[in-house]
Image (tube, rainbow, N blue to C red):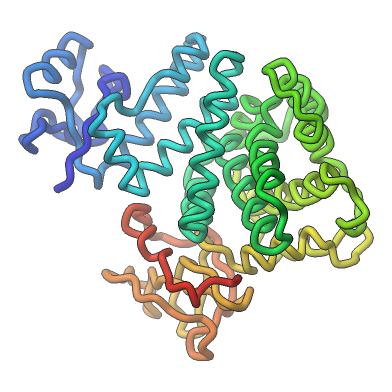
Length: 409
């Protein structure tokens, strides 16, 4: 058992606990399903037992409970500053743990990105943006396959922070394609990453609502969608962003202008890459009202431009990510169902971890298959909804750490 501290603010009163609560020594305080009636009771438990702790294996349930608490605060019209400052944990020990445990680190980064697009106070915005962008770029440099895997998983598994997670995924895609394929300078990569994180700030709340809404956008929502690029650029300017290229990229990130990248300005090149990455990620992301398209189909849509010619930016995405990026599910020639954990030297031949054997039974150990081998080749994509296996992100992320020879660059 590996215990991590939790903040009492993340625990909902008068609701069944979705996870057992323990003290610092692992002694059970309250079992799963127990109802803590009042804040006074909760404070007494925390003070009497040296804090509240959960097993790291229950951290996903804690994450979901935390998200529900945030949603309740939004529904209750709490101040955005109060919402943004509601932490999953305030313990220094937990902060150190989050730095070493990749699973909690990704959930924390998702929370930070969510606060970034919802909390628009100039005094906090610049600092939060630098922190989120810096952490994301570090992940892209150190564990690129892990970054793709985590964000693909978070996008597919829980749409409730869609806007923030979508921005993180698009920023990662742009960073990897710009660095590894197009060989753009560091300054442009940093700017493009920040543009991706902030491109939808003008409609973040509406975008989150649409991700869980069964009905098509109603007229008021459609108006926000249509105007969000200009609104996002205006909001960024009001928040103190003065970089002309950054604002131009955000303002134009939905423009569809085919043609080679070399003929464009730096802002024009970044805009085109962002537009293709945004489109690819949106097609791959499930919503309540629609199912995502297969990775190969999303890649094909990005690969060809509006004139049905090969798009230079789209081709860079495919070369950087592969046709089956980490975090996507595939069926192998063995009839096993696997999840891609590492990109391969060929865009169609990644490394994949087996989740279901040929009989459809979950595997205890996730054997890695090299799909460049004929016996284990990919025969089709599999939709997230069709994989009846719950992934443990903490357990899966180490599998994304392959040898240097596995990498596509």
